[in-house]
Every structure is written in structure tokens, then in C-alpha cells.
Length: 94
Image (tube, rainbow, N blue to C red; front, side, top):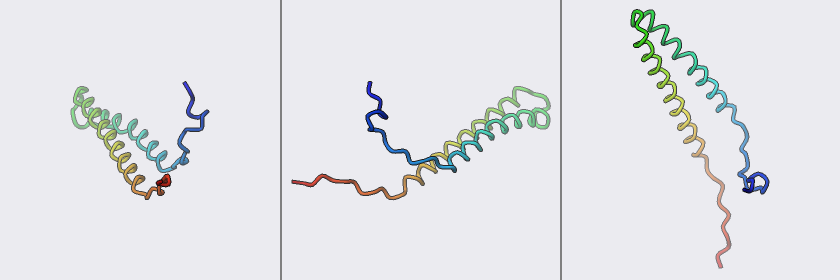
């Protein structure tokens, strides 16, 4: 197989966007902290020691964080795609 980088047919990189990296780090931290905090918080204050309900609460909050990340990613992609594209080069019609 031919490597796309070796043949020069790879699309040019547009550079690293710091906002994307910050959002990824933020949601990674949220994914670690929120479910664990929810588990222990609901274990002690909400469900009075029921580990099953506390685990379900933690799973629900983990899914909420995950869906939040997906929504933010799609909004970011939509905002990125609204920038006007450069005109395409056309072959001269004969």
C-alpha cells in the first residue's frame, strides 16, 4: 500500500486550535470528577447507603457529560463549517 504522506496526497493541516484542546481537557476532567462525586454524594446524602442507586446515578451523570461533549463538538463543527470556502478552481470549458 502507498502511504498518503509519502505521495504528497494528504490534505494540508490547518494547525492546532487551542479552544478544541481546552474543551477536551475540560470534559476529560468532568468525566473523571462528576461521576465519582455523584456516586459518593448520592451514597451519603441521597440514597442512604444504597450502592446500586448511587452507581446508577453515577452512570447517568457520566452519560450526561458524554452527551454534553458530543453536543459541544457538533456545535463547534457547525460553527467551523459556516466560514466561506474558497472558490473552487474550474477547468476551462472547451
